Image 1 (cartoon, rainbow, N blue to C red):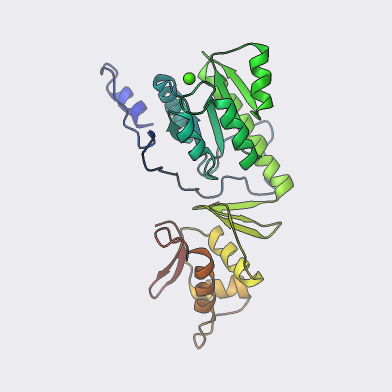
Image 2: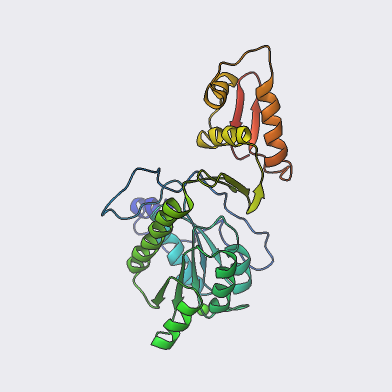
Length: 285
Ligand code: CA
C-alpha cells in the first residue's frame, strides 16, 4: 500500500527495497499474526454476486522459495487488503501453517526442507478446513492429481497472472467463510480466541476452554465489543439483564473467573484488561 503511494509520488524512482516484517527464515522467532476481529460476515447478511471482500483482517500464508515470486504475491495481496506472511522453506512453512491464525495457505510444491505435497498432506490432517492453493512450475495432469490428492483445494501453474491467483484466493476464502457460517455456526475470532456461538465452544490457540453459561455470555459480550471499554453497568445490563448495584462486586468476581480460564496461561498476551474507574476492555496488548 505504502509502496503504491510512493510510486505515485515518485514515478521515476529506481528499484525499491521493500522491507517487510513478515519475512521469515529458518531459525527466526515466528511472528504469528494476531487473529484479528471477526473475519466472518455477520449472519443474515448474505452478499450475492459480489467478489469476496475480506472483513476485518484475513491472514494469508505464502510458502514460496523463489523470493521474487513470493514478494510479488505478497505485494499484490497486501494491496487488496490482506495481511501476508512469507515463508521461504517448507519446514518453516509447515510450522506456520499449523497455526489457526492463517485463513488461507498458498504453497509452492518444490521447496527446500519439505515439499509442498508433503506439507499439504500434514496440514490437511491438522487443519481439515483451511483452504490451500498450490503453485508449481509443473503442469501435467498427473501433477495436478497429486496436488489434489494431497488435499489442495486449487492449483495454479507458474507463471500465472496474479489476478488469477486473487480470484481463486477470494473464491476459496468465501467458500470457507460460508461453510463456517452454515455448518459450524457463527464464529467470533480475536487474538487467538475462537468462540462458536452454536456449539458454545471456546478455544484459545486451538486449546479448548470450559466456561459456565454466564462466563460464556460475559466473554461473548466482551468479544463482540473488543477494543471498547465496557462499564460494569453495561455488562450488568447485557449479561445479567439487571442494573449494576454498586454494593456488590459480582461482575469483578466473574471477570476474575474468566481471566483464570482465558489469560492465565498467556501472561504476555492478556486479553482482559481493567480500566481503572471505568470498567473492562477485551483487547490485545
Ligand atoms: Ca520452488
